[in-house]
Length: 432
Image: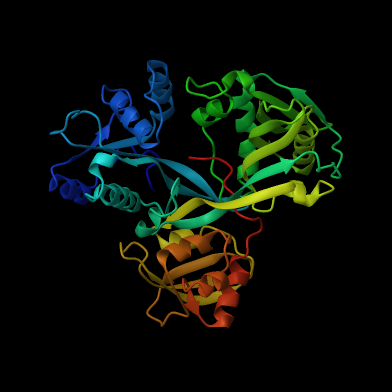
């Protein structure tokens, strides 16, 4: 069984040697040690943030204590204890199809100082993470990205998309359902617990989703030292007629010059069911003195488009969000339920070797898959990144074929599309 903690696993020897040859040191960082403040400072610098305050450092210690923190150090530099590159990782859980989950090696805080670019540092760090994850028995690695041009070189590819939604409330007269429950303002201090409860029920039904954590919810609630506009954060909860809390909306209002045209900025909208979703969106769109509502990490086709009189009052800008990397083909493909039968050989090319080879994928009439190595000629061929994009059903093989990223005859590609079609469109509704 794969270990549930990453912090105790040894550093990758190949990456350690590669960095040592360039005069750099690869080392784990203890969140409770003296090396943590400079580690956090380097992370903040990498993401163009401010120097962390003592309060922020202590808050981050608590949030990151269970993670594997890794730094690359230039001991001959002006600040030998401040890493010139960083990464952190931990074990999370990915929903691969409704009510089916798979452990995933999650990666975040990837930075390389501008002073140390083009030395192979990022390659050493990322391949080191992947080798460690694969050796520990994990079938998938995942991350969210700030730049879409970086991670494809190591076999990551987008598997779930999200949209940034902007609603012109002057045109968006509500025509959606009228929810039978009630809305109440709730205190910020209660939000981590409330968000956890609702999100945990939601995320196991949506492919591409992962669980949140205390630090993420505290940030959304404006309860962390670095939280912007903390005093402006407000929240409402929706309870159904039986009194069960089914949804949470967390938002701020940004003032605009015209007093009736302020902007309501949604920080989180989590709804366990259609009634809660409608009630929370209606609250946002009909809020007094608001001319515009914005929300990120919404579904690719946001349901609110169907709940207003003028759907063109809703603008949804789509972007890739959840990037996956397949490390174990049988483990990844057999983890989910499929929408139809399939019996094909997949040829996967993987320069790093983890997923390379021919794999027979057989899906029975119940939607369960069995995957094994094969000596047969592949029916469809693809690089490992394309396999990651196909995994959750968020992209079709026929679409990737058009781009030259999957190869096979039309009948085989159509069969893949039919089997991989998702029960729900993949979505990751948080950053990690």
